[in-house]
Length: 363
Image 1 (cartoon, rainbow, N blue to C red):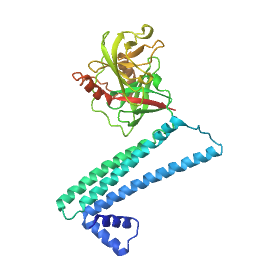
Image 2 (image 1 turned 90 degrees about the horizontal axis):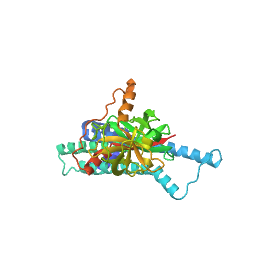
Image 3 (image 1 turned 45 degrees about the vertical axis):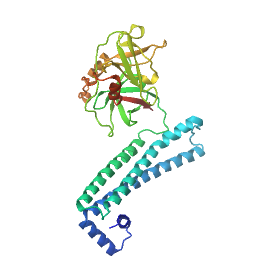
Image 4 (image 1 turned 60 degrees about the vertical axis):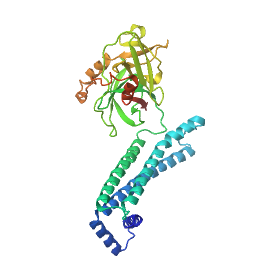
């Protein structure tokens, strides 16, 4: 049976356009032909997902029309964007929709190519037909997961929202526990973004303003826990020891290297080290690692003189010990095993990269 005719029959059946005799014949055909029945199920599921997405877009469009009407009537005001700001806003607003469109196009391509191959009766045996249908089903399911995941992420943050503060954070437990600077978190909604650009909602578990340390927990159904982390946490480091950092002074990760220049921090503060390294505001909360790839501190604010400081890793242990007094966090287990100490620097950075997150804090 020609693939175009099959799809046309599925659509007519779905839309109630068949006569009673045609309905009887088609339902009997589905009962006796599992491949066609499976194709009908997958096609109906695909159409339902597209309609669901269309309904969501229609609802969002209605909200935008209401907003526009209220602006016109002077009920609310909205700043006018110009130049680069307008371009940045338009890209921020529509880049995810573009991704969705590409994903849906991918699904259509998979279905089209798969159907053409599956129903070529001149070359396919029943066994091969069954295998190709199963492969088509698997590929289609993968594409749907990608599109549904992107739809789910669209509403995590309003694309028009401006972060109140931001910086860097890194994993200390593969279950989604991150550590960063307390001063990075000035808003209530926290978004952690990994090196692949995936956004995750995180909550504040504890925040120590005095020591400038905060622990976050990623609580997002899209986050997949890490089996192990590549680095350990080392409490000791010597003067002049080589170090490196990774952080987000911009929207992509930046590597820097230097050395430990003092065993105390600003005004001889024993809480921190002074380090000789290039760092910007967005690096705050990022990891400071020794030559073996062990965490030896958390990069924090510069002083007025331009020096850079790092909170000693000892205070990571202290923060977690205090947090674990709450039974809700008793399962935290700090990373202790280093699997990258024998790798060269480039390979170390590749491993650490996936564990360092851009942190943005919104109202």
